[in-house]
Image 1 (cartoon, rainbow, N blue to C red):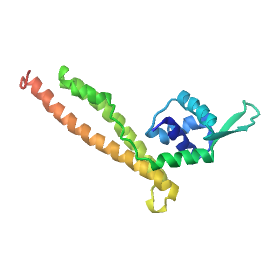
Image 2: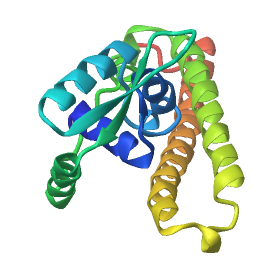
Image 3: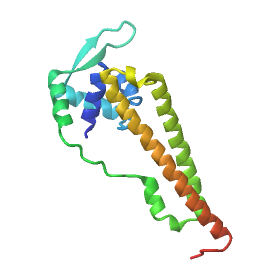
Image 4: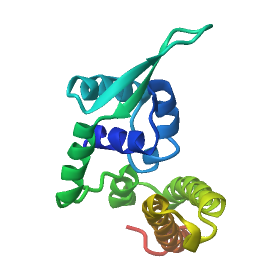
Length: 189
């Protein structure tokens, strides 16, 4: 997937300015596709040049005019073609897993600290997702057809974070046992 697909997906939800898109991106598509505001602005320019989006200039009195971007029919067709193609699995690029892979180079206590910090971040993300679920999707039977697709992506995020926390607790238990054995002089290399 390219950033262009994520931006087009966000703009189909609601046309907006580049500034508003960059802010909204973090709270929607940004949960599963990260991009800096600078990357988003560059991509908007490319998408407009390709005719996949168009910009409506909106005059403002106390500020410079702003451009509100809309997906064109060609942009919708581009997304439809992309959606119909099989998704390519994303390779895992996780710094923490590389650290764990060579974790024998440090004490288990070092990795425990790192994992506890990561666990805190994942628990906070899960809480954010659950809050969104309660706020916008409390009654799954009443969700609009468009909302159903957004709900499916949210549920994936909830499952991902829940599985990650389960794995993390498992890893912390194993590392805790290793640390205790090390402190007791057992299992020394």
